[in-house]
Structures are given as structure tokens and as C-alpha cells.
Length: 322
Image (cartoon, rainbow, N blue to C red; front, side):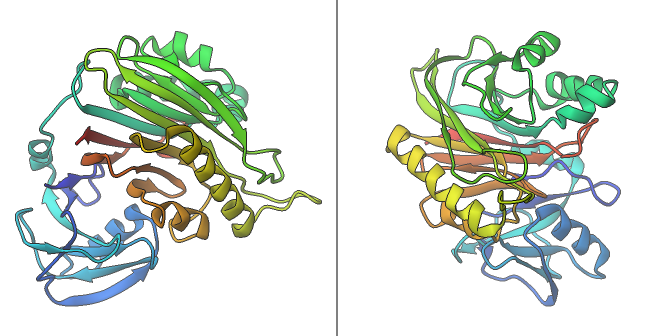
């Protein structure tokens, strides 16, 4: 199975991934110290002869290779590392085997920081692009929003989202109307306060109305700056990650889980690794935004969208319950 990204970074080239690291990776062409997928893609595009790379989030590196792939090659497991390879963008739609139109095992999950104070406040004209991006391009089944001061405004302006969870710290979960029954919504203070105040995890239990399948969606926005005695750093975010994982385990137990958020952290930070060390996999990331999923899912497709007025790119993943 391949996993495609939506970013055409060099003409008509996109990237797809294998399920692990290719057994025959080809010749090495150097590496980049980065946890961000989009930076690895751009660096491969700029490296002469690069046709693929092995990305290893835990190590914070991408290793560039000269071999091309078709998606059917044999792979091996090496932690969270995976081989990404160049593909003609016109071919990427062939990897999307299922489309969610209410019911079924496939769910499209999105994470999006809306940049509210600017895009809906000081420069409110930017909000039109964000709204159009959500309803016309991203088309989520479930979306974790950060910097969202008014979920009711998002619901009324998009016409395609209902609030599903409580919103705490201007973040929470919304869903496409008619797909899910919502229950067990809640939030928890992560005890990881920074300059801008307390940080939370919010959640909701979603039951597919057509199949009865259940999963939990957790969303968060971690601290980023310090001020006075409100200290935010990697250790503080790690403490928040530990408290967040406890909330996930206490509520969802062994049920399927997706996690969305603006983590204000690279994918090599201790807080992120805490998720990876405790059974979660990274589906997709861009800068500090990411989606994680539990062992209950197969990852179908992923993508990084346009800012469209925000200062963050949304990320999305299509997941199928096993």
C-alpha cells in the first residue's frame, strides 16, 4: 500500500510512501536533519539524483537515495522509518481506494490551526479562504481545530461541520453532520501552561451511525512561548504529553483512537516520542501540526493542504478501521 501526499513540490512531482523501509534503498546521497516531511521532500527535490528518501522521525533525519520506486517493492521494519519516493502527481489518485460518503470503515481526519486572532479578527478577510478551504477542499469527516474561538461560527459559515466535543483553550473537534453519534465529550488541563495560559486536551467518542463502529478523537494545542513564571519548553510539553496520554488511556482504553493537534514541537521532541513509544503511529505532519493513530487503523492516504489565510498548513489522513 502506498501513502500519498498532496504537495506537488517540483512541477508535476508528488511523493508516496512504502509501508516501511525499502530492502534495497539504492545509493545514498546524504541526509537532512529534520523531522518535517515537507522539508525532506523539498531537500530531495533540490538534491541532484535524489528520487527517494528514508524518513526517520525518531532520529530526526531523512536519508536521500537515488532509487526510484513503484510502490510494490519489498520492505523491512526499522522503527518508525519509511521510504518516500517521487511519483507523477497524476498517478496519486490511484492509491485512494475508498471515499467516505457516510458509512463504512474509512474516515478522513483533518487537523487545522485557524490563526483566529489574525484571520478572523485583525484581517477578517482571510477567514473566507479558510472557510472555503474546509468546505470545498479538505472536506473532513472529523476535524481537530486549534485557535478556534467560535465553533458555532465555523459551523454556520461552512455548513458542513457540527461541534462534536467541548472546546477548551479555543480547540476541539467538529464532525460532518449525519455521520456520527457523539458522546463522552470532555477535556483535561495538561498542566503544561506557557505564556498564553493553560493547555488542554479535548476529546469525543464517535459512533458511526451506519455501522456502529466506534473510535475516539483527541485534539490538543501545546504551549509555545514563556513569560514570567509561565515557562514553556520541551520538558513542559513532555509533561503535557504524559498527562494527555493518561487521559487517552483512561477514556478510550483499547478502543481505536486518532489524535490531532498543533504540538508546537518537532517530531523528534520527547513529548512526540512519548506517543510513538506507547503504541501510536505518526500519520502525517507539517511543521508543528500532526495526526497520530492507534494500532486499530490502516493508513490509506495523507496530505498537507494550503494555509488559505492561516499561518499553518492543515494536515489530513484517510484511515480505515481494520
